[in-house]
Length: 206
Image 1 (cartoon, one colour):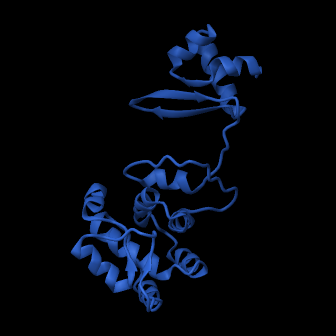
Image 2 (cartoon, rainbow, N blue to C red):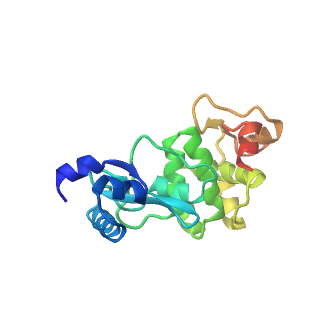
Image 3 (cartoon, one colour):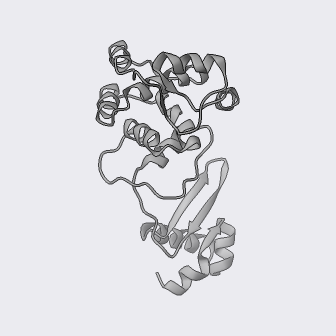
């Protein structure tokens, strides 16, 4: 695909605006769109009841699964990160949840909690929590998530193991943020981990 044409088309298009910009008829425009997608310069949003939006870029879009693609697949409100996170190879919701905790970004952490309803490999999550010394953090976030949204049931053996790692000194998930709600504080106290969410944050998730 010629760079000049990509420069001309760069940005967002509907099929109609793409046809107008290229002067192509529908069948030829769809064929051109398919070629752009194959070359990595176009990605599609929408479809079904929503109008398809085609985003065209001079730079190739990086394909693959990452923390944000997984979070946005389940989140109530999509996150718009300042950087790309793409993993080539095995990367599951369990990995995305741990990476979101490690990132220490409030909105990304909040939206990552919806992953708790899509965990299939609890043993993998447990191993990752151990690896990164996040056992009590995963435990407190799970207990909080259960009060706000639908979650899969964590195996009792895993929960019992996580609680044994309750720290003697209270820790923060995100520095400087702590709850202002009594019920959420009880969950924090149970794990000795300060939850950063307020009652309003919890209500937003429901």
